[in-house]
Amino acid sequence: MTVEQSDAQRKINELSLLFEISQVLDQSLDLEEVMHPVFRAISEHLGMHRGVITLLDRKSGEIFIENAYGLSPGEQQRGKYRLGEGITGQVVKTGKPLVIPKVADNPDFLNRTGVLSESEKEDISFICVPVKIGNETIGTLSVDRLFAEEVSLDEDLRLLSIIASMIAQAVQLRQSLKEEQRRLEEENSRLKEELQDRFRPSNIIGNSAAMQEVYNQIAKVAAGSTTVLIRGESGTGKELVAHALHYASARAHEPFVKVNCSALPETVIESELFGHEKGAFTGAVNRRKGRFELAHRGTIFLDEIGDLSPMMQIKLLRVLQEREIERVGGVETIQVDVRVITATNRNLEELMASGRFREDLYYRLNVFPVHIPPLRDRKGDILLLADHFVEKYSKTNGKQVKRISTPAINLLTMYHWPGNVRELENCIERAVLLSSDDVIHGYHLPPSLQSAESSDTALEGTLEEALDKLERELIVEALKMSRGNMTAAARNLGITERIIGLRVKKYRIDPRNYRGGPSIDPSLDPQ
Image 1 (cartoon, rainbow, N blue to C red):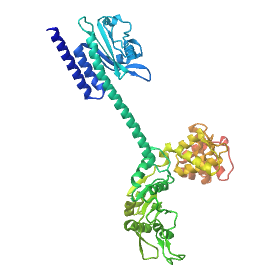
Image 2: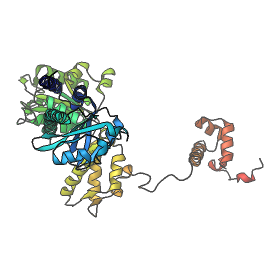
Image 3: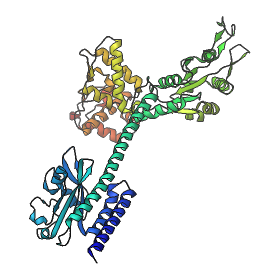
């Protein structure tokens, strides 16, 4: 083969290699995924033993191996350099390629990965070219191969420089996509926070996951006129949710009328809800509009709906079905356009099972249920609520309470809050009033919140001693009730006469003390 033919074949092989690499790089944006086939193609063309891609961490100034061919994970982990350190560090620092015909002859070849033995260094050539984006060197592409006199390392250098440029474009594209992905994630996070703030009613405090679900439900149902049933324990803030539903709806500028069904006697609740005509009953000296009429085009909130009498349940069901009412003592049918929101802390399913709540009314009310979690299930909101109430009652009472002490915070978060938010509010109001140094301390909180440590009432003695003390007290009480009759006392305690006799002797109890007889020291008992 002539020199011209050899050069032509070499160029064809180079073009074939570059085309193959470009196709591989186009297949995926993941550098991890494409570099192995790229290195394999280089290995087949150049006789490469090992290949390495390094990248520069601008923040730490460290050059690390991003991808490698022919190196173990441990060897890759060891391959770290500083700027100007070793061949790799020099290429990154200067941005110029280096060719080392024999690595054994060059002290700058550090063999940091430990992949070459001393004897192997005599036979290995090393080529390292910069990977650049514009004028900035972001890393290196390096290969090592067997040294051979007939091999033109300059030709290999030229080819590797072209490949490094192709890899640089792939790296740049990957970095751009990562940056765009990061920007989109930040934007999505910002939008999510904005949406949460938008759909979190200003009158409700809480950032817990349980409350976020409540906010989501409010956002879904607020705009329409759907009947909503708010469920939750007493003191959880059901009325606040009803307010939020009304003021986030198209009826926000219309009346919002509240009725507590448990606070009104059965004799007057019909008149309160539907109104009455003059003379309808004793004391009805004028016509009076009911709450449904007053709420026309707006919202009526029926709290404690589970306390309605069976007769009022029937009448309310008719209003929900027909959207019309009749005043007490009247015959005129009045159309009402009212959104109905109800609330209860009672178990309506149990009331239905016992016949105290109508099933058909339940299904009319339970179109869209919203459950308010108890405070014990949203512990993360306790301090937010406490801070809010501290600020509120500080202003109300002309105080400057600035913080809650750590012991008080511990007591607040450890307590189970059976009264929920209402109980917390009352506790904070009390604590603000008691504070004399602009700080709420643990001793400002009610006794029900105190722990054994905070109140210095920790149990003394062993469990056995405490049980003995309790058992003695129970026996003494039983003897008092039976006027010292051990048989009756044993029967009341559910034990035998023999056992009570043993316990009386153990605890040195004289039953005669409880029937008015003389006391005898058990130590003097002839038995």
